[in-house]
Length: 204
Image (cartoon, rainbow, N blue to C red):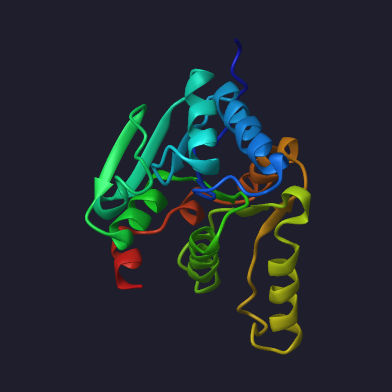
């Protein structure tokens, strides 16, 4: 299998520890996992073996790809930490999110629950405050993220998201469009813009 040339080493994917009610969500996670492996891009994710998280990670590994799972101690049993790939166990959620940030060149949010929402919105906040410019993409499978996009537009319309503090994010409606969209965004960034110092994260 030939691996396409890409500037992306790893992508952090946020997604649910459940599978959701629509089979399209599980299929999208599995498809994106295969795409990552086929392109030689590593996965950074929440470390669980259940739901979309497990389907995504297993799809990467089954296709010969690389996976780093990052999970806090208190979730190891609750989310059935994956016993394949590389597993990093952290002391708490803050350390988990910091490690995931450090390992990733970009962020993708597949469908998920409140934890997935919190994680991707935190990355939007860090970017809004000028702490990083790594691409953030909403994988809008079956219009899952439409309500969040509408809420962000509503905040901007009412000037709670003010000029100069824009919330920049990407949207892909199809799984096949995720990597090209991220690659296009990264191609416009200087190397220094893709990084954020650990000390900067720890102060947030």
